[in-house]
Amino acid sequence: MSLHTDLRIATLLDAYYAAEYRWELDGEWRAIRIGQRCPELEAFFPLSRRFGLLSAWDPQSIPRTEAVNRRADESLHAALLTSGLSFRPGFSSAPNRSWREPSWVVMDMPDPEFDRLALRYGQLGTLVWTRGEPVGLRMYATQPLMAKHRDHVEWAPLHSKAIRQPTKAK
Image (cartoon, rainbow, N blue to C red; front, side, top):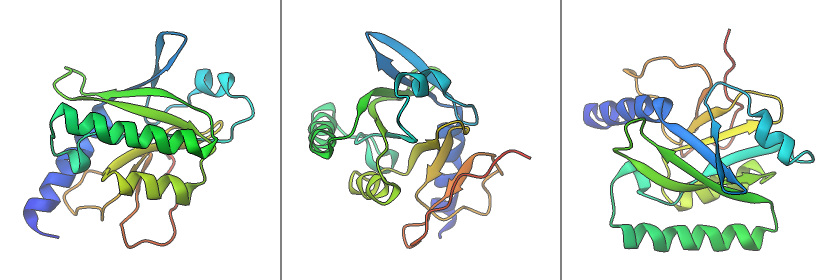
């Protein structure tokens, strides 16, 4: 990995880790936080075991026009509709709102399918967790040497066949 790429991914890791994530139900936006459990979402979907937040906006965090992003989001929405799984609107943003994007929280999508969709839409990071466990950040890249260690971050290189569970705080 080049120094430039390494620095870019390490910087994006920091941004994703600091970002605000939300999901919608009945017109209310509710928080999702990396490293914390999400009991409110889990209570609304009591039979669901796995949860994940997906987006189709700005692949690899490279800004695109709103029209292009909306078309990609409509395509992701259609894929979720055909999956037959439960899902809700989601939202991701920088704390100062300098970056923001619509997302989808999906319930019980098998990890291989979830990862395929994330990669199909060029995402560098997604949120994933199992009921009762803290929310984890899954990064689809090799961990840069200069990246700070962060609890609840899982590195899933594109060539990796086995996607591991996020690491837990010690």
